[in-house]
Image (tube, rainbow, N blue to C red; front, side, top):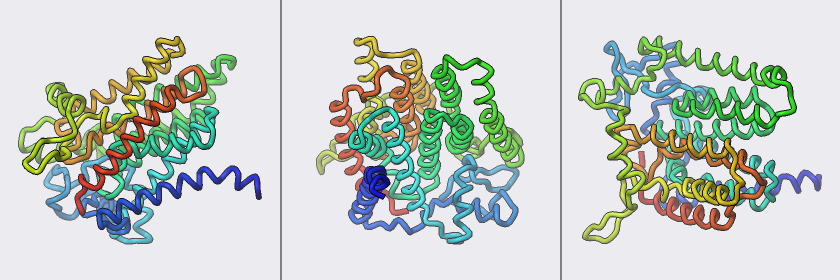
Length: 398
């Protein structure tokens, strides 16, 4: 019993810290985690699944619904609907989606804690890093509302972090299935798969190639099966295996907008890389409500750059670590090619999708200690304070 308590005190403290953080924000906002969001596309989709249907029965003007063949469709990848579908048997059409995204965040914290403990970090350092990694970023303001966009991002982050943790733990089949499910939340997460497999392969140089292939093959096949399910679902809805529906939103199909384009990147870099967080107004400085620099809103990326410079100077970097950094940049550029990059938001919420690359970097680098530990903590604490403030400002009582 005593040994169990010694093992569980840090994870229990982490869960308690998450609950306190969410509760304080709800009190400041006057919100309730049990109140369903009005932007409940996944709940509407789940209720249709229960009827054996996919298309919605009618338009819901305030939702982002695709219009195809004179029918209305939820224009998002399907995986976040699955847990909501199960919850509808308890809550009906009033699933507490805010509480759900907060649960995703708590489990994400625990997965980061497990990663850091396996990397020989002490319990205290693993606890501190896990909490600050998750909440010293644009992720925190997403967790006070269960709107469709935030559900997708929160579940994608959880599944990706769990995929990294399971691959590091030597469970490639589970890891690759979790990775495949994350792509069904945020499609650009497809970038993580090859890196996960390569890191598993390179960490076992003493094993014959056929042994490593045999270990990876079940996960690859199951992942392809999941991808095939996405393709079939998209064909039924939109007649194309890669079309999740956003191209049939009125803003793109009727109004002539372009969802993803290289021409958006320059403008978005000015806002989401170089942009300052505040605007001058007659009332003083006010936090920008349509985005600012991802390096300030999500300082884990600034930490990642500093780690890479430090490791390069000390020759402690590895090819896989630098590949993780390069792919983080590619991932962010792909997100910056979107026309709105998230619209009304704190900081750069799309950048949350790329946060797990920092965990890949830490796994791949030489040495078990967190590089630049106290500089990292300082930057993430500043990120937490800003995100806490931003969560009380950039909030809509949907």
